[in-house]
Image (tube, rainbow, N blue to C red; front, side, top):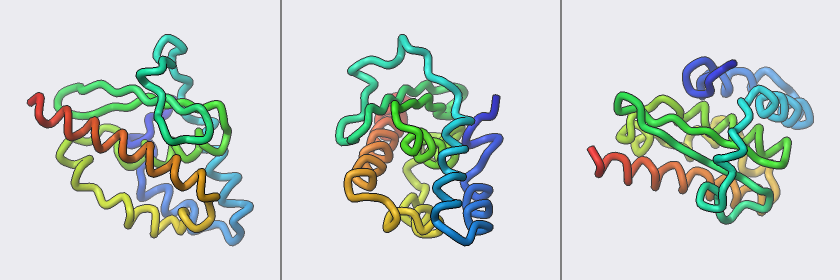
Length: 143
């Protein structure tokens, strides 16, 4: 099973998306990434782990291992699972400080992603990122 952020990196996703000429093909690639996202343990699909602000159901769980953050995520939507994979590729396996320092806006700009999402999907994506960054802030204050 691939780990997003270690086996599949943000740079690899940028390079792969640049290969496609049409947004239809890019969406297909993002959906395929979502299919590679490991299924989340249903026991973790709790209201506490639910990301608020997303149109679809989205769950995000985290753990700290050797000062590195690892996230599990899932959604009931194929495209959102793909967007989760894109986000996890940027953040998984990073220290809380690296998560906070990562320029997600630049990453999305390089992917040319936000303007190709509906406003509700864009807001959901921002809610996922906000939840991850809040987790990094909380985890860095623990150490």
